[in-house]
Each structure stands twice: as structure tokens, then as C-alpha cells.
Amino acid sequence: MRGVEFFQGTLDSTDEIESARVFDTTLRDGEQSPGTSFSYDDKRQIASILDEMGTHVIEAGFPVNSDAEFEAVRDIASATSSTTCGLARVVDGDIEAALDSGVEMVHVFVSTSDVQIEDSMHATRAEVVERAVNSVERITEAGATCMFSPMDATRTDEEYLIEVIEAVSDAGTDWINIPDTCGVATPTRFRAMIEKVCAHTDARIDVHAHDDFGLATANALAGIEAGAAQAQVSVNSIGERAGNAAYEEYVMAVESLYQCDTGIDTTRITELSELVEEKSGMDTPGNKPVVGDNAFSHESGIHAAGVIENSDTFEPGVMTPEMIGAERKLVMGKHTGTHSVRERLTECGFDPTDEQVRAVTRRVKDYGAEKRRVTVDILERFAEEAGVERQQDQEEVRA
Image (cartoon, rainbow, N blue to C red; front, side):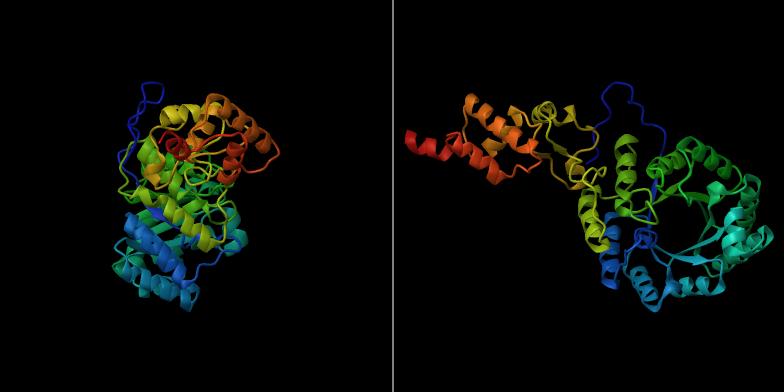
């Protein structure tokens, strides 16, 4: 279902990456959105779709957090074929809870920026390295896959960050996640950072970007271009503060812009987005990329006329609504043109003349200018008031 290659032009090169894995953190970081709480059934339902779609890793939660959280993580781990991950601090109790939950991967983290080491952990740099190494060794000795995160990496002294990375690499970690915890990275700087990290470890690299400046997905993709194998994403971008890199944006960018097969069943993205919107209680903005109501909607007369002729005229071309399980919409309003009105009238069973189309279009524009929604019922009323005959009526007259 992937879109065609770019039309010949400035963007027809798509060889920047060869592969990109998807680590979903909707059930962990996504649930940390203020006011959001997933029930046991919510988590199981979301995890089931993520699993069926082919998501590589599902971070099911923070097992030590509560008995209910532990049970949800354990049940997701036993019921899904995707790799299930549990979060843990560099604390024995956290790690044991994650291991006991049966997850295949334990994601252990510790602060590495001075501001967090001193004012959040109340520890020293040396103590952080020691705890990190001990935790990685405990996880690997238990036979689980280990992912280590130096929290707040993008605000960490570079030399110290490399020291920590080399220490946990020597301890045997399988993955190193580089998190932009406070969302301060830019794509160019983040790419350079990931390249440097790759040069100091044999572990696979994963990236985790926050959206405080609206750069999370761009940073995640920059990390993949720099050599990271995987990005942590969240459906509808939900997560701490402004949220995370968006599952749907990341997957569709990799599939469509980079022309790289993620292995994800993209046709269920809209279904997944709507489920997470319902269960999280967080409304998805209409202008949200990929999954917002306006993503494949057209009102402007010039755009609608072009899309009616060929959808590639005013849509990406390499991404279609069918690819994500959505539908294209022609919206009636202030900017609507005659092509769109004629199309909609025909869909409703009318057979208008050119003059009738112009008359109905004027009514639609005036109505939309008052910031009122032009529904099908309103359109049909305008058509009837303009004397537009239905196709069935004309067939009866001819008969």
C-alpha cells in the first residue's frame, strides 16, 4: 500500500535509511500525559492492536508502580508476539518487578544531566555510573534484553555522557536509548549527537524525543538517519508535557518519504488513533498530521477541483488516506468552489445545471462565511430551494 516514488523534482532521493524499527511507548510515557489513565482493559485493547499491526516493541508500563500495573504488563507480555518492555529505575525493586512481570526487555534509566543528578537524584556522577552498571549487569544476568537510558542526555555534559555509555556498553547492555527528555534538541544537533554515540558503543541505538518545540518526530527521524535502529513513539503524540514523537507521523514518514518498509500494517493507523483518543480522553486536533480530521480534507475551491481530477495535485502523493485506513473528504464552506459543490450534489443524487451549481455554491459560501458548518442536509436544502432536480425524478419524467 506504500505510495509511489516521488515525482521527478527536488525530493526524488529516498536512500537516507535502510531500516527503522518502532518502539511504542503509548502505554507508558503516553499514559503520563496529565489527566490520562488507562485501565487494565484499555491497555490490553491498545496493546492488542499494536501487536497485530506489527509494532516491534510495546512498552507496556512501569511494573513496580502498582499491583494493577504489574498485572497489566504481565498479561500483555504473555498475550502478544511483539517484544514487551517494562520500565525500571536503577533500583533493585524496580528491576525485580520488571523481570518478574515476564517482559522480554527491561528499559532501565538514570539521570545523567548535572541538574537532575544534583537536584532530583541528590547523587554524584560516580554514583550514577555505578548504579547504571550494576543495573545493566543484573538485567543481562537474568537473561532479559537490556535497554539503558541516560535520562536528559541532550542536557548532559558530553564527556560524561560518553563515559556512561562506554561503561554500560562494557557491562553488556543490548540497547542504548538516547532521550531528549526536555525536548531541547534540534534535528542537526541531535543527528550529530547520535553519530557520536554510535562511535562509542557496539550496542544498538534507540532514540526518544519530546515535542516541547514541535520537533520530536523530526528529531526521531534525524536519529534514524544518523544510525539509530529504532525510535520510541506514542500514538497521537501523547505523553509528558507536549508529548512524544508521534507513532503515525514517524511510521508514515519512514514508509512514504524514505520509502522504507517498517513492517507495520499502516491501514490500521486511523483505527489505532481513534482508540487511543477515546481511551486517553485527549482530543486529536483537526490539523494533526496524518490522523487529524483535516489531514485529507479539502475546502478551497482550487484544491478541491484539483483533488477531484487527481488527488496527487494537492496531497503528498506518496501518502494516501487508503494507506492509513482513512477517507478523503470534500468539505463545504466559505472557500468551496463549483467543482466541489457539483461533486457533492451528484453524490446526493441531484443532476444540477451549471447555473444551479453556481447558485448553490453562492449559498454555501455565504453560509460558511458565518462560521456555520455546511452539512449534507443543509446542502440538500439549498439544492431544493434552487430547484435542482434529483436524478430519479428526471428518470421518472423521461419514463
